Length: 254
Length: 254
Ligand SMILES: [Mg+2]
Ligand SMILES: [Mg+2]
Image (cartoon, rainbow over all chains, first blue to last red):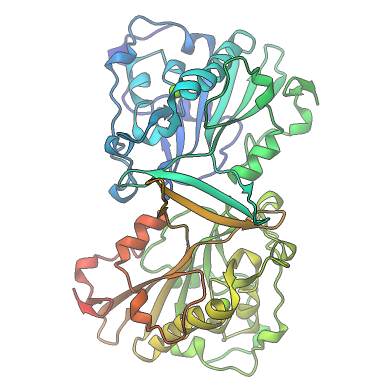
């Protein structure tokens, strides 16, 4: 049942945090609890390490009381000014302010939607062909999982992946934008757990490059073993779960 | 007074941690307390975020009971294997295993020295011209500060500094070595607080590029405002101190 938007508490409820983080924290660095998602902030890169959401069919359902157009992108005052991304950092950078916790995942209350517009929840994303296309398709896929699973837990974040150069050496290279040198991640990940009605757990993991992706590329192309994301991100996902007891990973029986 | 090397406790004492960290933690990510230094580990880059030491004339004095040659570089088993640097990562990389907490700062007990040889305390450093020269000179300078100050607190770590390229954009780029992709920092920092006999506090901050540095370069060339390191590292140093009440920063009256 929906509460009117103006009756929701402005701060996160401890019980809601426990719900969202049910299967473990990927890391404990600069954690922030918002009204409907939990975030770990990377103060060096001025983008999240990870954001964690718990979705249900109810929380992602259309709700006329919640209007995305009323939300403003705004700096997160809870982050020290030395490490705080500003709207001016993104301006004329060529990159979108890309939500990590997607706005459309948080439709129960206006406040939930508002909270996803904090710049601490953003990372620079290629707009056309990525944020507004392939990445958006992945977000839609995650929301649709609430039709299959009673509870969907999703962890989202940036990656800075190495590549080999002509000198035979391996490098990590990424652009930084604006006066606050906000990192432009080379890739983004999502690691998802779906809790079925029979209590069985299903995991999916995706890595997408932060670049124009042809719209006809099937999502499966971006599936990777969850360990691949863990090694690259320096995080452990859903570590309260025994991975061998999952029903499936990326659609394959474990 | 010195305890015999074999009588020292193998684990860090809470009181010793409180001593070392007297003026605040720079961050709280993956903190490890060793027998005579405290470290925050960067699981993504497989090197420290920062290490913290508390030095006195006594702790850095020559001690025949402590022999660096008895110490072995070894992986830190307290780090999850996905994020653990190995000796093989450094082999044939062209880089030294560079101590962040310097071995020669920990001469009270063999165990103190041993603990600095954990690979979690290392970052890849250019050997000749840097680790064995300019950076070593900075370490010697810090030890000499114990002749001036009763207590010396020093925080050391890596930086990944941006540079502008011909396309007008700004990038962060660094090499990664070995199967575990250990990051080769572009620079290293030290932020130091000296506590004088009159209780007055003096701060120094240094940033050095991880490259061959001419031996006749004076240390002062590498002094920077502490805020510069903080912004770049994503850390706040000695945040329990009011910086306006320091007696000096980089030798200049505050
Ligand atoms: Mg988006
Ligand atoms: Mg050294």
